[in-house]
Image 1 (cartoon, rainbow, N blue to C red):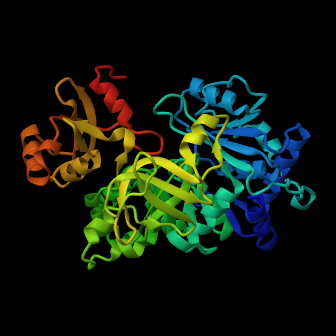
Image 2 (cartoon, rainbow, N blue to C red):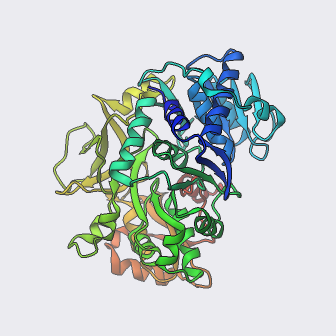
Image 3 (cartoon, rainbow, N blue to C red):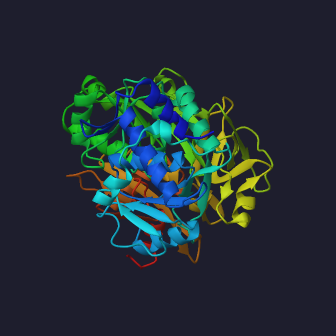
Length: 511
């Protein structure tokens, strides 16, 4: 089983069909994509790289990302996708830990040569042109790969200590791809997925199901999230599908609302927006549906079970007549087809319906383990179950509602407080754009609740307003002891709010 087979089959069937687009322009047909990836795979072998060795991708979103990715799999290599916003030293640590030999970079991302590599290739250089020179794909056989061989070595964000390398296999990604059609969205060859969020993360992984369907793969000319560009691009090449964190979805919805676009206008630009990776608050998804119509599907997964744990379908999001509609859209949906989900206490004992505990996932999407870290693997996977570190509860119908990461739980005066509940309450106040709630050490209470609040443009918020609203919405002990009104929240390259950085700021060490 090799993911490269997905490219070969479409190159044989529809070699002249547009496959990769740079903005609205065709960068490669399926035949050209296969010929370039086969050429690079051949040159990997000529250089002595053997199946199982690692190749780093440290790049902004680029049409050649997909060509290099599938070339590596063609040659049986393991791809190490790296967050384009990491510091050079952080990347060099990953290179060393992964024992990678080659890296492909873009000059705007890599500050200079990365230590520890045998070869570093600027993807926009003549060197890359030569490496990707097309050959007859039929002359380059696919490397033999087993289902449990590693395909994607993804390094976690490393908010507590060094990041861990998550070993994702060909089976894991095949499972993810096939599951997309069942639990997320149907895909046809006429569809187009756009890579605006980083291809080093979930957005890039969704290349797998779209390649399975023979769809088009679009990299915006900017290589990033520009809502105006995305709406125009969708009108030009056809409605787009994409994956984005909720903060990116909010930017897209903000643009649509400010531009006065109707749901019908949105439908001409977007087919499906899959969101995940962080909480989508009830107020935000309600506004998104109102402004853009039924374009949305939510997924919940982790790097350790990529894109596969639960899904909240378009049907569930649109069923506003259901008596538990608000509870449902505040959830992350039901278990996706190939996995089981359960809630346990600290000892791993299953908890009854409605009780809060740790979320566990089991199935063919779950990682093989952590790279060169047996202790972490043994802690995370027990009896086949992935202990996610997320806290949540299951209702009688199987809908999973996440409370928070276990490390984000605030214990104040002996009471458990889940930041998301406080954030949801604050977001219902007019004029609040974004909120992040964290715990701050306190000598009397152990921890106290602190809310970072971003006002909407042109809105003036006061602490008194926010506190009065919280007292009307949630129990007194849950309300923030401090409100900090700020211009923006720190986010990583994938759009997730960096609560670790907020805690550092509270400690008086603002970076």
